[in-house]
Image (cartoon, rainbow, N blue to C red; front, side, top):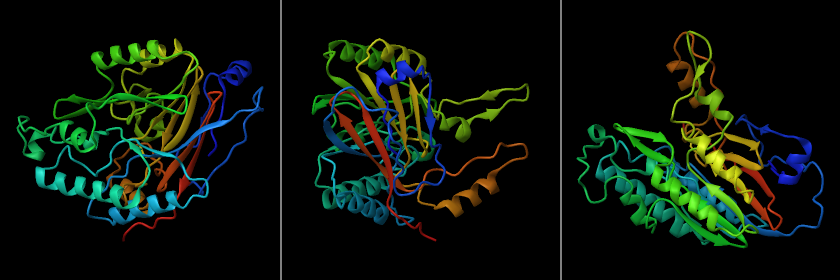
Length: 344
């Protein structure tokens, strides 16, 4: 889909939130025209590919699926100049032992080496973190590569949150996965929040900012994917589908009008929320429904459903995002499926 809305348009139209495409079946590319042209001719500063939730593993033909995705991407007539990943690069390391984790990372490094000549910038997801579930992974927490260290070292990251600049845009990559008991919760810790505030304060006002986080900051699709009804009425939304400190992050962005967009992944759905001048876009999944395919995924949902459970939708088909960044701060996004057929 083509997602474009300038801050000026949003204010003039009085939009508080606009939501598009909650992950239902998507054709190879959906397009929506902008509401109206910008005041002056704009120039595209950068085209990038955003690939999230590849969940590579030896099973389910996942490696072949990522190969197909990258070859489809590289065959684009208007090829991107940069690849951003949105996390969950491998199927799972949080519950896996060392040997299983190594196999998955070897596959990821091989597919990038063999199939992706473009520069790549990475964001970590919850499944990229080794051993936080000590019981299932058989770890103690004292291993040198435990937690986020293994992924950071392989991906050449000093730490899991960082910034870089390209084509007049500042990119802020966040670490949105925090430890909770033997698992995780969505959010950024206080040290990282202070760092984020400092980065935005130091950024020139004429430099546009794009934020990347694995777990969404604001997301509409998580309501149909995750919210559970309460007996007394209303719904409970857990800390696994959206960051729990979204209010302070959104408030911080409101003080910096040059924050234009925030890309995320995690829930394997395609949506967009425009709020207060920022476009929050969830980017589907390279793996679609975890390489199961639509029919098998829906069958699994039905088998696990309990009486009274709300209906859950399918997740996005296997795909990636083409994102165009413009010199006036506008952003366009297409979700592109690559025609993958899941293993039987």
